[in-house]
Length: 262
Image 1 (tube, one colour):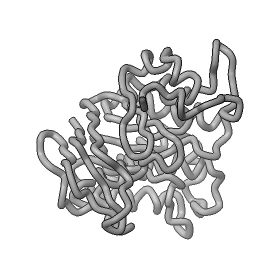
Image 2 (cartoon, rainbow, N blue to C red):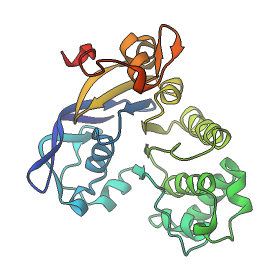
Image 3 (cartoon, rainbow, N blue to C red):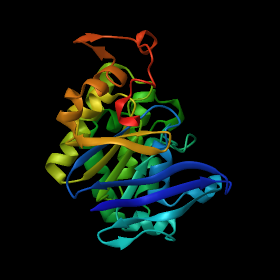
Image 4 (spheres, rainbow, N blue to C red):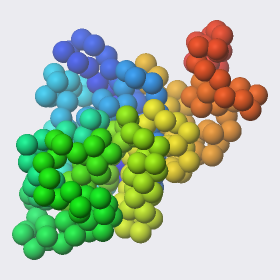
């Protein structure tokens, strides 16, 4: 199990990005972490991955645990070796390299034969990636790049796959293809998934549990189906009121009416 216990994160030793956050991701589960831009979602993933120091960030309180052991102080490469892999927002591919070279970079901890087998599994999961395997990654479409980014993460044989805004900027059909593949990984290979998304409707459809974060703290959590039926979540995150879609601009007294903040 991946677990955060009362985690606080500061940037530049002054700016509080995450405050007293606790959440758990059971083995084999798919869990959603929802919230608007700047709420702290990506910071939480970076705290787990051990890459906060690259942005002058630091976990100053609480702990990040995996399989009952702390991750705090571990180098990012050691966290990867323990089986926790993050697919960052924006994909972060090696643009000048080919698709296959990007995949091989993801399997740097594995033997040559194991990496070859891993590539074939990625190609089976994403046939479009097989078609583009000799092309320069930077020339791919956004959806194809996202598939390569997920495939690169799978090359390390993750126990926990953390996805940061995988649907961002993609066409609906591509989003459906990518999420179908992630669901299949969870169902068939038992890969645990922590999904960070702004598309709350989609995230709650494919996960079993969700957490909502605002201003750096968890304000609501529960079974995904319960969150989908919650009136406040429907209005403020699913854009619905009385069964009808609504724009955030149409919601009056937005902050005042968030009952979980009262």
